[in-house]
Image 1 (cartoon, rainbow, N blue to C red):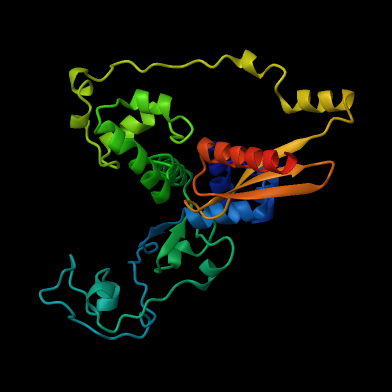
Image 2: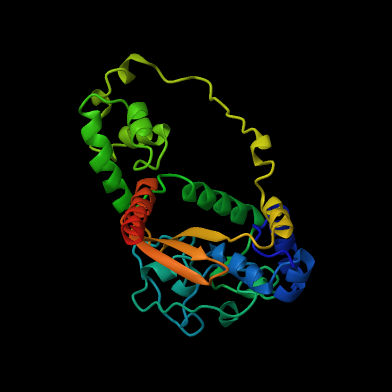
Length: 305
């Protein structure tokens, strides 16, 4: 079963077609090699609401529509023709103070939509549909919004503010700041420029004398990564090395993050000894790791001397 993969436009078209054919979530899931819960979430996340009636029947979702005898609710009448009873007009629900909305009970259980319902021609209630084209548009919009903006927390921005802004106001360039503070500034030079452009940092473009002299590049520069740098550095290479050196001691380092923007832990795990050390860090940067190892070096040097 193909889990943890996004649905494609073809998948959504298949869902709509099978819903029109009254197929169950299980049948749709088996066709797409997905979990039935994935199909359920997809449909409920992309419902399209339509206030339409049936054949020769106006939209009317009032629970009292069959026995209501009210007339002339609006004066002058907004309908194209004068109805004796207001319940026959599609404006009835808007102007009636006693309106009580009725929702079809079938919509509270799978398949949650009216795509394959055989009573649509005689139903005057609000309808819900699943359309592949609409679902694909909403999916692309959400995907685009999730990748926009910055991926830094408020605490991380404040950390950069305290380091970058004072140096920029001392006439240092973002390039110089990144080079001389690479262990504390854990973002790229381009990110600093973007944060300044977005007014997220207190420093302004006017504080960068050289920037105002240059215009934006018209062509994007595509950086190609040399894949040969991965030779001998993959996890498979690591396992191969361990197979040839089974007695070598292994120490594993990792950063553990709790809530976004809060403090971090540096863990040092001695695998064979089954022993782990954990150190609290204020920021997830290289400088905090360097400080911890310098502290360990000084402490161990004092105990051995």
